[in-house]
Length: 198
Image 1 (cartoon, rainbow, N blue to C red):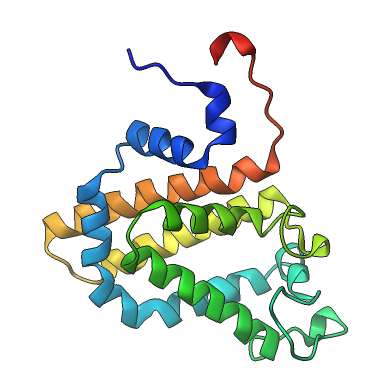
Image 2 (cartoon, helix red, strand yellow):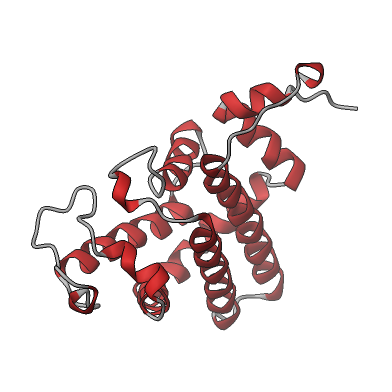
């Protein structure tokens, strides 16, 4: 039986990612499958981004989070939710961020820098990073990640990959998105781990 320091899981990002990766079974072969998908996924990233933002715009509970000024955005800020359109400069700015995120998933090594980036993706949607008024409720983050997971699955299935590659790619992304989900959820909770299980 492998001993896990549960207190360290809450304080050491690298240790947490190593544990969850090992538990889920996210291994080098999964990373290789994700990276191998880059040439076929890269051309459809803009379509994925547009699909995500169209879904976000369908609900006021998700779209309202694009009304305040976004961190790093210097342009004009809309004054009303109706002004936040798909072609608004601030939405185009946010779409570029999502496109870079999706590109990073298929191109970057899964080292400490990438783990810190995935963790910041979770943190930046809370009041713990960036602007406090941009804190997105966890239910919206879970809904969004679920939509992204399904959109990625649908996209991969539409690429007509060789069956073995298709399976490896789907499984790799499935595991990766569960790891991302953990690195989102961790910023929404206050965990107290009993000393006895440290």
